[in-house]
Length: 490
Image (tube, rainbow, N blue to C red):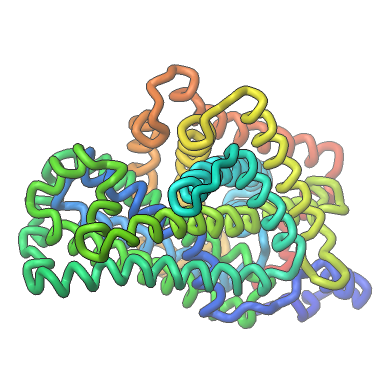
């Protein structure tokens, strides 16, 4: 397999040096990478914000096993994803894999889809962070500010960290993520200490519970809690031994996240009781704050408020880094201006691409402020819901691209590159359909304009494909770079 530092066969020394100069510096190990990608999934925000909605409008007591079902589908996806990561080491990840499987037109279409999905997602996260930070400042510290103040803080800090080497960001995310887990673990331990074995009701393990209520909505919402665990391959060039580390980190992230949500939702049912669905419908926003007050103490609510905000900031930083790496990859392949694909001479970071992400986010937040939009409902919920649909769609397309790539290479394996990716495709495609069908639940809007927003993902995909066709006719070298073997082990 070819690594970042090894010239490709037939590549001149000068070209090899240019390739190495365009590479990002490997500084991440498996543990740091796991923290980096799990932080994007925002466990605290998932538990406090998504889980109560899934209890209320999904399948109630069947939710813990629903999380395991989502984990199985993502585990199957990871099998093919890991096989592909050993073949292609590229910060473009999804779109690089899709281009290898289906060619430049579909590949660049996927790149445009990815950029739109992640950029809108990161703007939505800024809205969420701003709202929860504003609430925490007021309720915990008695400081009243406009939501644009915490938004500006998030943008400045993410811009600073995104400009620097990724290991700097990974350290901060590791600290924030550790605190999130510690706070939620304290709640779980307190409930178990009080309830004993009753904290683990056996009814949770019944398949009848899984199929009760609205299991389709439950599985859709469960997937939103895993968004980000697919991002390991984006850091391939910044990871030591990527052919080994990417797979370990992705499987580790899926395992850690699924066990965490499974145990937390199971213990929650033990604390609330078998009527958890009815209780969640009455206490959607306050469910875990009430549990914190009951089992940990009055200060628990304030702690959760603070770390809910930091959880959203961690997600903002993680998705900011994801966006910048997609832009960097497209700049390096001359599909976007070349300066976007040049790493910083000192930090070896995608600094110019990071600046673009910051400018786009600042522009969107600025427009939201001028229009008087609500940061939680009109910026946050819509942005995150839209991005979620796009990311799951990318995962589904990638699954099929893995099959196509290895079949074209004549190196298919019945499990790793055929059956597992195919099974994950069906699971992910079904989730996309559910997400589009229930987009009002994802965003909290019944507005016809908002409900039609997923169509923009299709438009972005078609625009990227059309641009690839233009490149093929007018700039064939740039088009060839989309599917060539640069940083590929194939």
